[in-house]
Length: 142
Image (cartoon, rainbow, N blue to C red; front, top):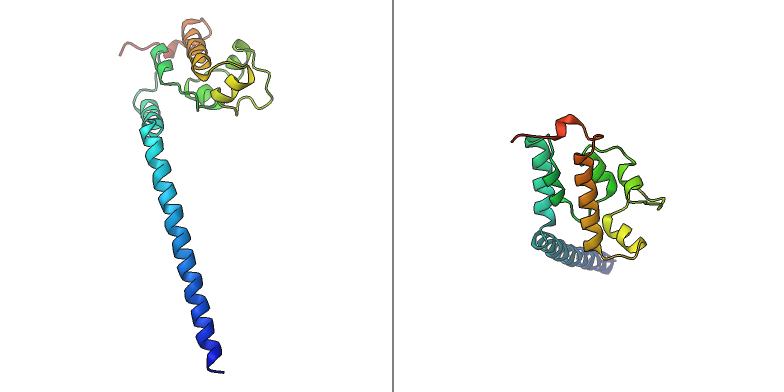
């Protein structure tokens, strides 16, 4: 009977060690992915955009340059305060996943390069600011 507690303790030690190794591996991959995102400036871009909303709620056409291909149309509609179907109609998007789809996915759907689709979306957002349908508050003197 003295063997059973010793075997149980060994088994528990083995489980704890295994969980520790798994945690270390997951932490390694998390840090690596975070650094990759930093390198690709995705994190910095997101921080800059949320800061821009807080510090400068009046958006202008040049803010379209902050758009990136990983962004969803839903995010763009909210960020630029556009009507929900503005981009859908202007870009002729028929995918039922709209507006929860990224610009990259839209580019794949229409068989274009992500960079050319990104430029097209940026130009469409600029047109929104230039059109009469854009709210007056979107023009800023600062």
